[in-house]
Image (tube, rainbow, N blue to C red; front, side, top):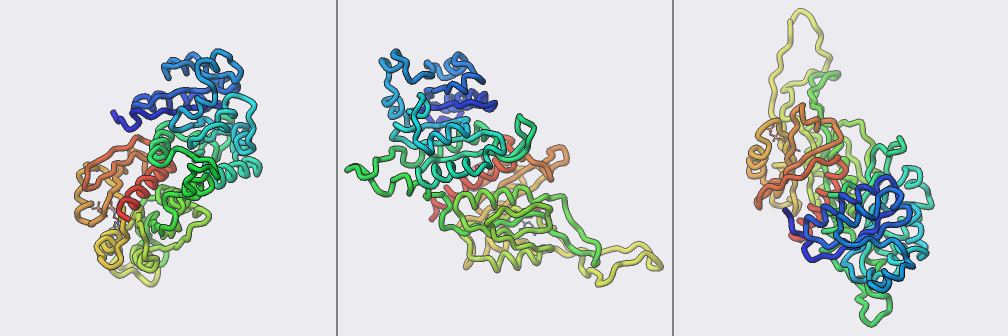
Length: 428
Ligand code: CTP
């Protein structure tokens, strides 16, 4: 069991909403990793989970009331807000975010958030329209860009209310990953103008301190189509979802993103530079043109072969009987770029789609292609990965193999991008 959070003190604020139950799971995951968790349950939160279950999991009393004299005698709310290494709000409701953005302090949760001198990580959860409402988006922009508040999620998906879209609480393990990352950076926020203030740590700067800021990330995605004649082609079942999700996550992490994509039925994430291609050879050409890049992520399911002499006219049935084709191998885009000494990105990531012996094949590919990391996954029909929304990946590198739990492809993308950022910044 991981001990990444041993000795860390986390103050968890559980807001109202159907996702509050995931706050309980989050406490378990944090404690498993060695963290001390103290919890504040808002009035709305109490409608969804009981103080008793929260307290059973934290092993501590639960704080609910600003004006509880007992609590104030034991530990004042100011002290509680400073005693933690990190404040985490999960789920963060639209109301709680609005209070935070306005600096309101009319209950224990909002008062604590205003009084703290530590970083705050929020995991929003709300109805999709509430999330997309301009008022909520204004509050998010204020908190993230000006006040240095960190965000994890929300995820896209079906909501308890039956609608679909962004607004689902991030999964507990994604929140744990965001907490670990937040704790790896500075946690104390000095007062602007204070003698102790280090201007590099002021909130407005922290908000802009994105992990991939200033980096150019190149992503390949989707299948390639290799023509047989003008109307027919060889293809595969790749949907492009994982590559597109990585492009979106890299963009959100502050990178400039070029997405070289084979034919897919997805809209490109707004803000990425999309270069649409059809064949493997076009993909290689587009990748070369897009260089230099700091990070190359090769998520495309490139067709290994193409028809040697694709017909210029539609092949007709008839006198010549059933046609047969000879195939020639396509260029290996990943290997070409990884082994190009002059133009190699400092971090090169390949994918390995396998139907059996997933990790063994991935290890062989790592060596054969010359990349820094292979993200391997099982694409056997039973896995449902090809074309589906979920993925379970193994990270294979020179330092070993790491297997991640099954997550939706957006969550996998965000976690991968966080890892790529760490690796790229470590080698920079
Ligand atoms: N790849 C590539 N160009 C190719 C073939 C693969 O860039 N012509 C990249 C993929 O984008 C992926 C990695 O290489 O990042 C592995 O792809 P995969 O299809 O799993 O492996 P192959 O090299 O095609 O080997 P095999 O088909 O034998 O498994």
